[in-house]
Image 1 (cartoon, rainbow over the protein chains, first blue to last red):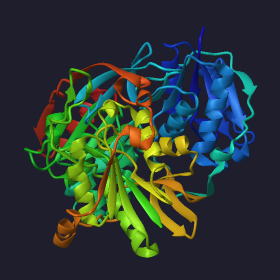
Image 2 (cartoon, chains in turn purple, green):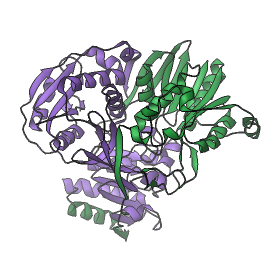
Image 3 (tube, chains in turn orange, cyan):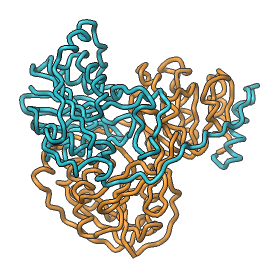
Image 4 (tube, rainbow over the protein chains, first blue to last red):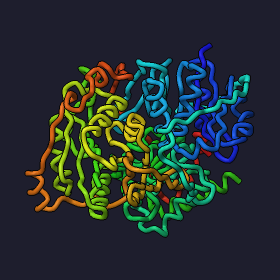
Length: 318
Length: 259
């Protein structure tokens, strides 16, 4: 059976859920194999999970130099594995960095690139464009299909693979070494999940009134184990970091549950969240457009409803 | 310093954007075209680098004839001149085809930095700046929230999912900036008047030395097979909070097994 490469995302020695989703999706195209690009010893701790979710092979590029050269280094490594494996397709989860890695690797492989797919029908990628107003079916017509897939598009299902570990060495070219990463800084506070691939997202909008009140959103998010997002108004007001902006010009999310608190639901915002599986909204304005999208909406004062909801969820979770 | 800003004209996100069913490409007539919102931050960053280091800001746009309107607006913000690559053969190019055209066009101008917005609001691929770097074999300094130039060294703070990375390279370098890196200026009346006489050099594929077989719909490495308008999301249930709003939400979440 043809091999399908899945680029592995991990954090702290654990495979991210988005990768497990891709290993699951890859089975519809062929036999999944995982590609780990990291430093010395990075692949070992991931092997168990990758095998459990179906990786026939685990290609490991363990080279401390590769990471030094950021996207260009990772793209060279992914292309090198693809040249060795000659896969039927390459699947990558749609983060900002991964899309750049996939694009550069596709060009190196003289292959077509499709990004931000939300489903697969054989080798046809399903994409949602223009704020999910239009569903597009696209195909790669040259080389090896390189497809980036949005997190939460597939439900991960275990299915044991052989998990054969294959070490791959990469020779970086001159052009791959032209931009150097000299420092990596982690700014994210606490242990909340990351916005882009979280299963649950709680976002706050203009209705929260001022920066100090954003705590209400954070507490609700923590009760649900959710990532925290914000509307553009909140970001523009400087109440939260811009990495938290959900919308047309921010992060696009499609979690299992999206809770919009004090968000009116302008087109700008809807474009970034309307493919969420379930949407819950709290807003004092019954005419707010967010209620046109919401599966369940409460017209009320967020300053009473949101804290009460935090308390109710905490109580029910025991 | 020679600063080139890569600018794209896109359909206004406020409009009802459509695809053209005759060839599944963006229907550029359906909605008024505007400068890609995030490119305004790239233009602003280019102008600030010029103010700090001297030199010239050139707008480089690959796009249909009508993109002239957006180019004039960029010039009215303060850019010095523009190169507009337009050719019927470019119609329907995908990200890789577009990147090849931009890379070839950069070969016809002097540049130390080429600055783009991190993504365009129409396609939202956020891959073209990285692809341009790949085609040219130039350093990729993308997703920047801060850009510093010191002689021939460019250093950026690259936004990551958990924070940022400091990435550094020598010129010529391809940069992309995220919104919020700065506050783009509005064109002044004087700027608008001055823009009318600023030079826009129009170039064909032949002028930039790119074979028509490398770009366009028929030569793209990807193909849109079909599209359909997504059904509008059905509105659900909305209740008024009578002191029990939170409990009702919790009940709903429990019924959906979400808590």
